[in-house]
Structures are given as C-alpha cells and as structure tokens.
Length: 112
Length: 118
Image (cartoon, rainbow over all chains, first blue to last red; front, top):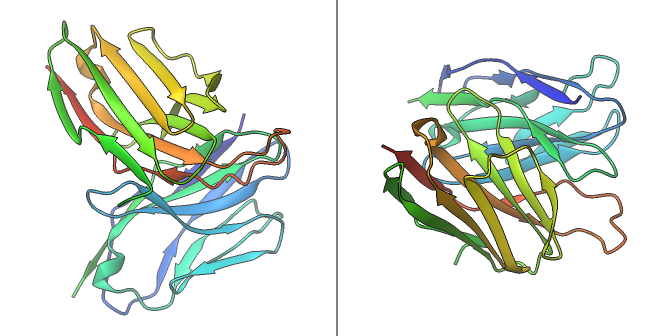
C-alpha cells in the first residue's frame, strides 16, 4: 500500500535559518504530492503541491520538488520566521483514488 | 467565517455516553471526510462521503457512526467509546467530479473536535 515517511521532530531553528524537512513516499502508481501545514489550534491547510515528476510546488517562500527517482518531496525554506512554527504534513494522493495518505507530521519550532 | 466549521471544539465524555460531532462546509464541495489525528501517528482516514453516499469505511469500529444528510453537513455519532478513542477528529471536504474522475487530492479541513473519553 501507499505510505509516507517524514523525519521525526521537533525541529528547532533560529529565525532566518534554512529549513529542510525530509519526506519520502511509497506508491504503486504516479501520485500527486502535497505539503499541508497545521498551525496551533487549527486544522490542516494545503501549503503546496506537485502533480508530476520534476514539478516544483511553492508557496509563502516554501518549495518542494517532486523527485521520482528518489521518491522524495522534501520541503525547504531559505529563511524561516517565528510565524512558520507549526506541524508540517507530507501527503500523497493517487490518481483515480480519493484517499489522501499522510505522514506523521513534523513539528517545527522557530525561536527568535 | 471559515470554509469548514466543526462543533464542538472540545468534548469530554464517559464511556457510556452518546454524543455527536458536527461538521458544516460552506465551500460548495460534494465530498466530505472524517479523519482521526492521534499523537505521533499518521492521520487516519475514517469515512468518505461523495454526494451524500458513503464510499469509504476504513474498518472503523461500529461505535463510530457517520451521517451525511446533505453535501454540506456531516456528523459523527459516538457511543460506548473507549479511552483509546481520545483524539482530535478532523472533518474535511473536497470537490470531486461527477464521473469520479481524477481527484485533485486537495482537502479543506476544519479546526477539529478534541475528544477526551474518560
């Protein structure tokens, strides 16, 4: 079956540091890949997505590139802010299926 | 007003109680979902409704009973729960094609209902 593996957190960074959160996946077909973010006390919201190999999703300074050869979709940001503190979920969805498979989430703490 | 609204935000219940969680979406979507979020575990898909019809039951115990009276409302009826059912229950919605074609996979979530079973 499908699965998503994320690095365990929490990840603690100082403001303006570079962020990488690793995500790898297992899927039988050609999935779409997503990063969702959950701010404290809120539900998940879509951060970015990529639907085919070599696509780059980007939003709010965050980027992730769909790497089929390494089955990865790592999240990056060049300079994090305190307001980026949240839990980040990597996810996939296969075409023709309605199930979205999520990873366990990675908590990011950014300190001033 | 948020797109997906869940009530109550917090619920404490005993194992013999009966309670319900409510979800309402204002986005014009036609698919609704219940997910369970527990600490250090991936989100677990519980139920999926498309056009008010249940299309997915992910081996959920019968003490959880969903109801979808229309495309905008979704309920989760709870009875004789166990302490291990304590979790954050998230409702989500999405727009699916009539032909069941390629789903975009993008879900819109509510803020969740934090359930504690004593």
